[in-house]
Amino acid sequence: MERRHVFVMTYGRSGSTLLMGILNSIPGWLLRGENRHAMRHLYDFHRSGLAEKARVDPARASQPTHPWFGIESFPEDVSLARIRDLAEATLLRPEPDTRVTGYKEIRWYDEDLPDYLEFLRQVFPGARFVLNTRNLEDVAASNYWTHKDDPLGQVQRIEAKMLSAAEGLGDAVFRVHYDDYVADPEVLRGLFDWLGEELDTERVRAVMATPHSRRGRHRG
Image 1 (cartoon, helix red, strand yellow):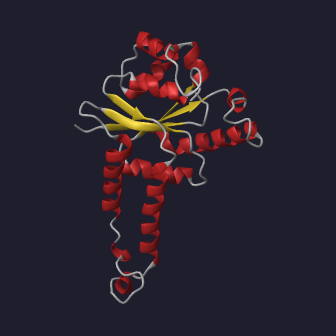
Image 2 (cartoon, rainbow, N blue to C red; image 1 turned 30 degrees about the vertical axis):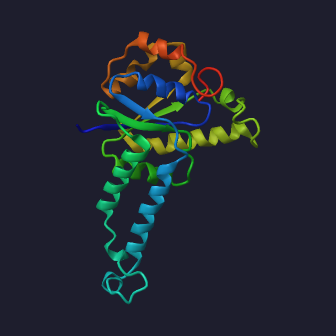
Image 3 (cartoon, helix red, strand yellow; image 1 turned 45 degrees about the vertical axis):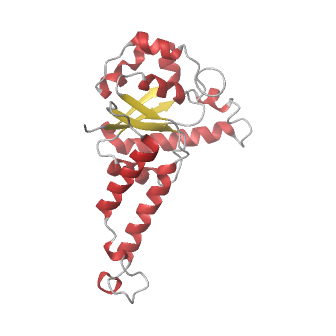
């Protein structure tokens, strides 16, 4: 069975844990939680291999006397395939009946975010991204942000960076807003149609009635 991949892009205290729960209520879905940007390390590995391959003279680097011996043959396709295998086996761990897998993450603020997103699309062909936002004043007022310098400014910059990078994803991204779907789950119908799934509002309401995240309801 060919599995699909969906990733939730957001920032801390946006309600993304609730959104993950809603998506995981769909039969055959298994989205994992945050992994502290673990895929970023594999992106750096892959990018380093390609950068050094491009830098050396292939004929000279193929000789065992060269200090970068062998890097000229760094196999891009093999690297992507093995990174996917590693992510599937360790981070995602799909079950036999899993149709769609992926994860939600709150760390999408690197300067090279567009390149990183393209890397994820190479590792997971056909990947889709759900971009979750929330009223930024409410986000900045949460205890996750209040101890940081200029919390509102930080979340504003992060959201702007995500929205800008998402423009390059075209039809592979769909934006949802926490305040809208919490007020009316029917708002999620567009997302579910985009995902090719049926919206069961009663099932969604049941998820919303369940506390999510570490403190209280709908904080993740």
